[in-house]
Length: 129
Image 1: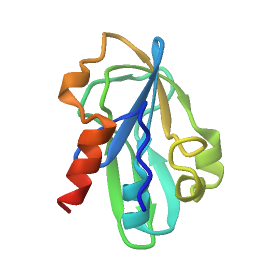
Image 2: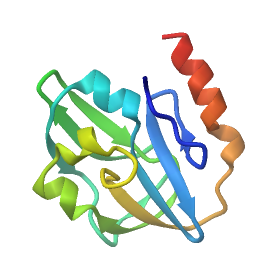
Image 3: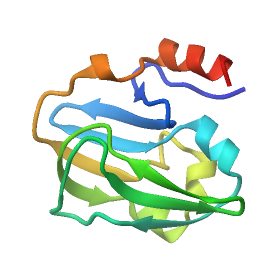
């Protein structure tokens, strides 16, 4: 059973964002990590201090099956890369929401959540796959 968190927003590409005040955490969903299989490497294409816009890629996630780009669902400044993921990318498989977040962004604008999938919308979307 795929875990979907209520307080998160999702995309049809299986990215997620959790808004925490003026910051946002981003990563890949439980469904995505399961489909990818064992994650072996995360390659960041953005670094701390870089600006990022909605839709831009910020990392690629390499697994035993394939490599997938990960896209931002918000705009802002990159303030942190998850060192735990850099040191041991399998943490994404074990904990895609809590410990397996990939990047933290300081938001540059209010997030328009109407453009994102709520948890229930994402669950409905997953049923179509």
